[in-house]
Amino acid sequence: MDKETLLDWYRQMVLIRRFEERSDELYQLEGKIKGFLHLYIGQEAIAVGSIAARKDGDHVITAYRDHGHALAVGIPATEVMSELMGKATGVVGGRGGSMHMASKERTFWGGYGIVGAHISLGVGLALAEKYKGSDGVCLCYFGDGATNIGYFHESLNMAAVWELPIVFICENNKYGMGTSIEKASAAPKMVDKAKAYKIPAKQVDGMDILAVYEATEKAIAACRKGKGPQFLEMMTYRYEGHSIGDRTRYRPEGELDKWRDEKDPIATLQNHLLKEFEMAEEDLIAIDDEVMKEVNEAVEFSDESPLPEQDTLFNHIYPSNGEVS
Ligand SMILES: Cc1ncc(C[n+]2csc(CCOP(=O)(O)OP(=O)(O)O)c2C)c(N)n1
Ligand SMILES: [Mg+2]
Image (tube, rainbow, N blue to C red; front, side):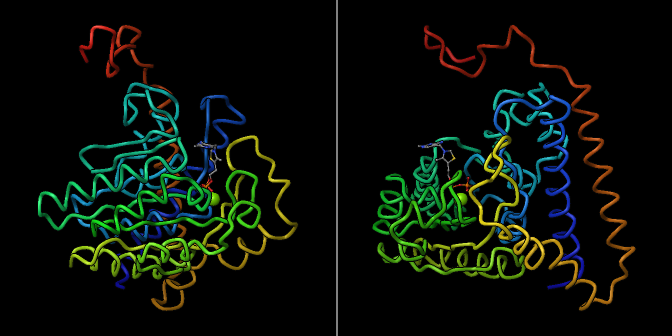
């Protein structure tokens, strides 16, 4: 992979990390973000590396831990941050908040709060592409916990029966809320669930952006060749709690430190850039500074943006007369 691409990925991962850290502060210290807030810290390589492998028009759909995917598909940080603050300048007008980022022009369909439910929507997006006879593909992201939900099994079965162009990307961060996989899933390996439906499935190091990219690129190519659904289990770790307020008491001592110290996706790419491309640390620090500026500007912009007008409250919903405004 060339240096420019790797630097771009580095910048994107740092952007997600700084964006999430700042969001945490805005929630807990400043009270400017309210409601749910599920942070993506630790998992950055997955959204950035896999979305880099899609071409324009390929669909992306995910669950509620969606800020990283929103930034990776190219939604400006200003619009993602405004959405978190419920402002009219948010990517969906401040109506969705943290869990419902979406952008039709970027074929990014959200952001869903009901665990597992959106997997069936991903299958629908893939079915539409097959029906049109295009070579479009859907990248459908979900957590390990979602694999215990009925929608997951129906979706995998239907996608396999109809040979649909969908890459199921399971972000295995070891926990669903406070429950470990061992306590929630009869099958400890998510790939085994896909294999039950005869879907080619692979475990991937989700902390290594190069591995993520390579696996996704191959899976997408197989879909485009008409080989039907593919499944990638990305092994990763969420550094923060499930949502704000989760004190993560259920994690064994030292587990987080081990992942963060030995596997951190940003540090791993940083080392690769320093060693393989003989880059100077100052060059990477300059990127970090630019990113921090971008995040601060996004916060300032969002802070100064207006709330949605009160008389637009009923826009985009079905009123009793059935007319949608
Ligand atoms: C149908 C449904 N059941 C329960 C919940 C509550 N809930 C929200 S997130 C979550 C855990 C999901 O874990 P996982 O799929 O591993 O995703 P992660 O949070 O680790 O990214 C649960 C049980 C929900 N939102 N929807
Ligand atoms: Mg999980």
